[in-house]
Structure formats: structure tokens, C-alpha cells
Length: 118
Image (cartoon, rainbow, N blue to C red; front, side, top):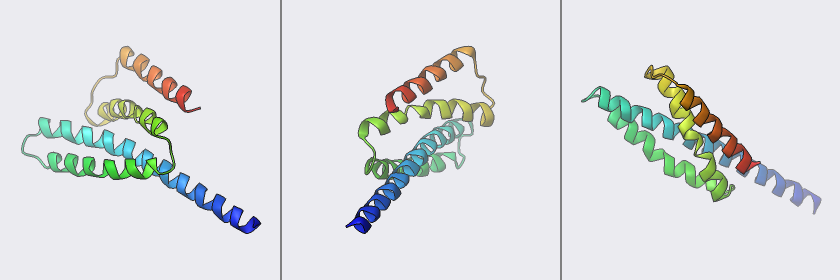
């Protein structure tokens, strides 16, 4: 009986780890897809549209796998961090400016997600 409990716990932990990994992958895929989409409009006729569509195509699969072991509320609230990732990625890859308003907004988003999920 004890062995079954340990195996069940191990399976639950592995499933939880897969869900968390898929949630993080969905976050980065969403932010990356948005970056590719903007890059497509900056460089019309480029391959960025196909990269964006391909990236967006994996998001539902990742979200589904995340929802297998995580609550809908936790997944949905954590997806708000996409805004933070887009801001940071656009600064480094598109050379966009980060203003004080952006920093204040990002701070509220991060604290909101932490408050909700803790």
C-alpha cells in the first residue's frame, strides 16, 4: 500500500512539473509570437508571419497540458505575465523604450499574479 502511495505521489509530481513547464512554454510562446507578429509588420514580406503563426499554433496545446494539473484560475492569471515578457523582449529585440509608467504597470502585474497564486 505504501509503495502505491509513493508511486501515485511521484506521478502527481511529474504531472505537475509537466504542467508548470507547459505553462512557462505557453507564456514564452505567446510573447515570442507577438514579437514575430510585430516584426512581420516592420519587415513586410518576411518570414516573421509564418514564425508568428507557428508559434501561436503551439499555445493551445501547451495551455491544455498546463490545465491538466493546474487550476484554470492559476493558469489564466499567470498568463498575465505575458505582458511583462513582451515588454522586456521588445526592449532587447526591437529596441523599444521602457518608461516609468511601464515599470509601474509591470510591478502591479507581477504583484497581482503573486498575490493571486500564493
